[in-house]
Length: 175
Length: 122
Image 1 (cartoon, chains in turn cyan, purple):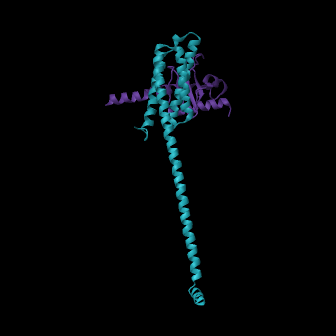
Image 2: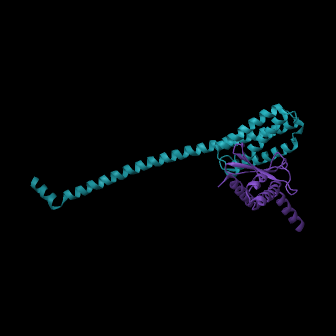
Image 3: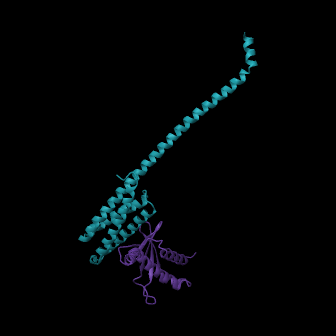
């Protein structure tokens, strides 16, 4: 009986078929493992992308929030200019300058042209601040040209509102 | 390249780009001063108040600021002409032309004239 089975295996090359079958099973197993690994990796990449997208949205929201505050401070400063509240203005201009520099250096999702508008605003605010400090220091506040300064601030409010509009128009912040 | 040569080159390039409307000059808190922002720097152009007129004309200067508004350089055409023989006349005239064009860009003069012409021709 054992001899018959042995002969049958030899006659029909059953050993070779077993080896081939074994190799096939190994390949299929490897394929399944590879598929699982890739699936896990793509899930990981997807999770990473989602986190980056979330971070991006948070940054965009922060930029909009910061710029809105800057616009509000500029409007308040215009009124303080009219009232000639020089000592108070020094603090408000200084605060405004710091906030603009923060937006500029944080590079929060602004394009080249938007950054240039913010940089222009930083220099203007810094120069106005110098003028007011010089005026206070030399008792020549009456020579400060409030009309031109307020016109300049109005121009910048318009420019910053344009940036806000552009940022809000981007999908995700339109509501 | 020597510093003065760099100044002169900056004046030339600024003039060329301004004439081609490639620089977005804007108004400032002073009526006769205009500024433009670049990748890392800002430039202001203005007439020099305390420098004597040359050939009955204003002299002009450029001020360079870093991105946070700190002044890093003052370039005056009256200084450069004394040092660069070839640029004696050019730097002065280039800055004057640049200033006039910068003023028109900042004030929106060209667009206003175009719109006025279009209205009159309609």
